[in-house]
Amino acid sequence: MEIDILINYSEQDNQSSNGNPGWVTSFEKFLHTILEQVLGANPTIVTKADTDSLTKAELKNTGILISIVSNQMVKSGPCLDAIEEFCASKKSCPNLLKVLKEAVPYQEQPQRLAQLIGYDLYNAENTEDKEAFYDFFGPEAEHIYWMKLVDLAFDVNELLQAQTTDESKVKPLFERKSIYLATTGNDLTIQRNIIRRELQRHGFKVLPDHNLPTELDALTKEIESQLAKSVFAIHLLGNAYGEIPEGSERSVVDLQNKLASKAKSVNGHKMPRLIWVKPDQSKSSDKQKAFLENLQRDVAALEGAEVLQTPLEDFKNIVREEIFANEQFSEESEEGFHVDDKKLNAYLIFDKVDKKATTPIIKTLVKAGINVIEPDFDKSLLEIRKSHLEKLKQLDLAIVFKENVNTNWVRMKLLDLLKAPGLGRTKPIVGKAIVGGKNSKLAKQDFEEYEVELIQTENGEGYNEKAILEFINGLNKAM
Image (cartoon, rainbow, N blue to C red; front, side):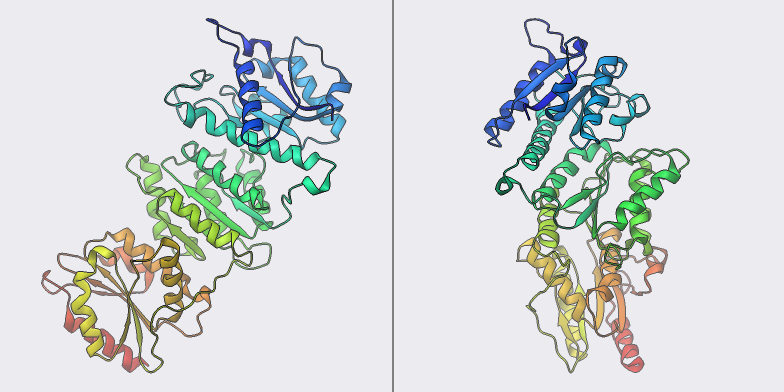
């Protein structure tokens, strides 16, 4: 190709002021710098405004067309003609990229662009101010502009490498399986793009790879179709509830989770999923808080899913462990704990803050002839998680202890027990109980869907030893 990258824009989007270059001029300079210095590429980049001459031959010999979308550009006949001619010369538009300089309503964008996932180089999180961003070196620049521009540069580089005729330089992009990375609210756009880029670098195709429809029936069909092509699904849930499509009461974020909970992967098995919930929900809307609350209560919707409310960096490490290191999406772990074939093996699940309070419970269980398996706290996050999953496979009896932890923490552990049969268990769980600690009140309505025994404290002062022994004796009779 004579032109590696052609940037097409409206002349009004590149007006200089106060001695500063125009927005598009700065964009082209920054993009070229990232490609050259970070990625080691030195492409030929040409900029063409709607007032410049642009021939069919130039478009035919262009590798990638970047359209700078603005409210002026979508009204520009030459810009729209350039897009159509580029797509016609390629018989499709695989190398057409959309960069939004400012907010432009979906319905006002030309059809070729509307279906593309764009790179928003304006403050998309601020619903009151969606104008072009010019403060390239200000305090908010990294979050609003630079991370998205770097994301674009990586994608441009991938497309350029895929076009090379030297097969030894072509990365094995998309040779492996497809992963459904659910679209998010505006507050997690950057985080989603970071994970998307990392998945792509490891050779996975990330779906959806285009904008989803805005009408409910078409949206539902498209999500189901994309899920059916995938082997794994990842959901990121932040503070924003997300946009609500036409004809729906659920947001797109909510709907994707609901459909994924019912989906089967391309290999015919129930779709395995990782769901990340942003740890700090203090800024969430009431609707988002209600959604997360209902999600944690919906046992059916979380079957086969692992919900993690950890720092995002820890979640990314788990994604790598779960997906990159094992394409079969299964885990092998060595036991780092004792399992007694001649006794009941009870997994006593508690948080580190409650470790001291569990000592008398452990003594009671041991005296009752039970082998007690405890959680790990002194290992890395991934080692703790592997060990936890292995214990879910080996336990006979599960006891969750609640003293200083909240109800949602307990629910997450009960959901882990629900997915235990899918981990390769060869025996049934003979009993499940929640034991309350000092000043801990267990409300039946909080746990009624989990089929679990509630063992309240004794007068609110401490664990109820008598009730625990009665529970264990009942299990022995049932066996």
